[in-house]
Image (tube, rainbow, N blue to C red; front, side, top):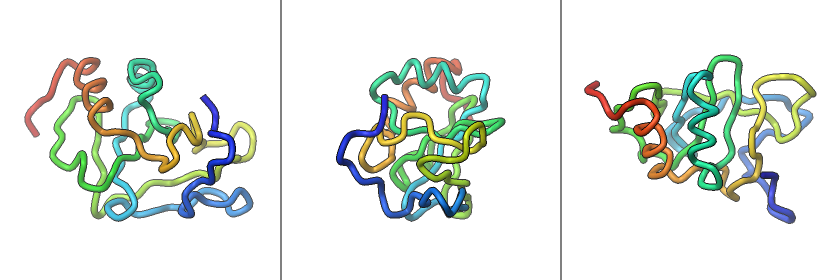
Length: 131
């Protein structure tokens, strides 16, 4: 999936020349971080329900509406909100660099619907667990 034609990315996405930017969680988005070993399976399970994903060396990060994943407790996922932050890449980072976008522009807001994301994580990680 590629960016939708004519869709402008949100203003908080770094411009290409500025490089990745560290953005705080809690206002524009919260982050659901999934370890790299599980993340491709989550993406495959989500299929077209996935929004853009930030790929880094150890984790892939899905961005969701602020507060929508705050009370989650799912194996294999770390939830960042409030005092957390995400290194957000520009739309077109330098080749072979991380972080980078997977599925840039899959949703106009660059956020993933938290319901299908949680369902995919729960199914693949063996269900919820106590925090």
